[in-house]
Image (cartoon, rainbow, N blue to C red):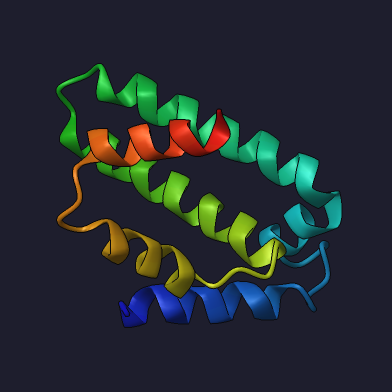
Length: 108
């Protein structure tokens, strides 16, 4: 597990106890899932827009914002980043097309 992600997740967990007056993340948590999702949508849009440019720095900046706010959502939901990394690891070596077909078969 990437220790930076684990450390950030720990910090975000601590922010649940902080005052929204002194912590941006605590303010997101105080607004509930709708506020977090709104911010996540904004960050996804900003990444999409930055990706249409040739400015790699802007793309990296917006990707970091999106990842950060995704971690805020995960922490709000009580999900550790290790769970996402484990899911990604389990997908290694599997065809994305085969995986999508298997999911479709389950939902049908």
